[in-house]
Amino acid sequence: MGIDEVGRGPLAGPVMAAAYVFKTYDIPKDLFEKIDDSKKLTSLKRQNLVEALKMYGYYAIGSASVKEIDDINILQASFLAMRRALMGLRIIPTQILVDGKMNPLFPYPTLPIIQGDSKSLSIAAASILAKVKRDELMMRLSHRYPHYAWQKNAGYGTKEHREAIDAYGITKHHRLSFAPMKNMLANKTNQESTRLLIEC
Image 1 (tube, helix red, strand yellow):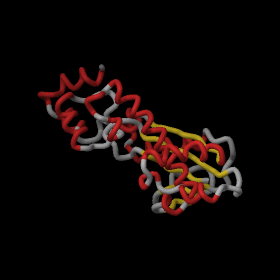
Image 2 (tube, helix red, strand yellow):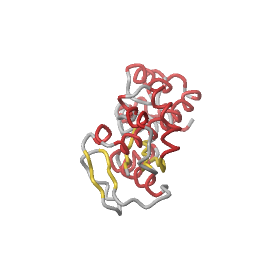
Image 3 (cartoon, helix red, strand yellow):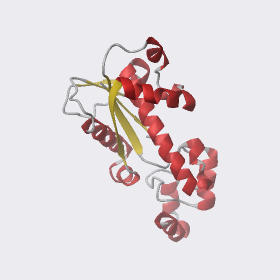
Image 4 (cartoon, one colour):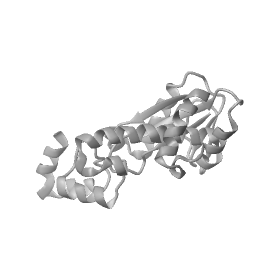
């Protein structure tokens, strides 16, 4: 079984993780050939894989909120999202393959794999499901907060996104422990207007 997270780097939105295990080894060859690290696939290719992955595997998705990211830091929030995904799975894993070099300390045998989403099909499948789910959320949020172009940048710190933060301020979906929000909060001249924006 593979677990991977997405969304550690963005300035806005939750961090999400997915747990995935194939139901059978009788998987169409063309599906295996299409599965890859979600970052290497286009949005359309990821979308096209989702239904097939759901058909041929068991999966669950977990997340950690912006508040949790700010309260316990992004690494621990990533592990929390992974544990929530694991708890949502319908089966008990015999071994967990997790992307990265750190062990989240699951209550099951766990093997961290550096660049695991490029080496393990189950980790790659998990990364695709988590990425599609998070992108869908940021797309929905972009309708309410159109200035930040989350439908394009998924909350990452692009030039357009950073300029929008400077121009329009911080929303409740921004991670206050991340720069530039942290710097804005530290600036006393912006503190009151920033607080009002967060509460909107």
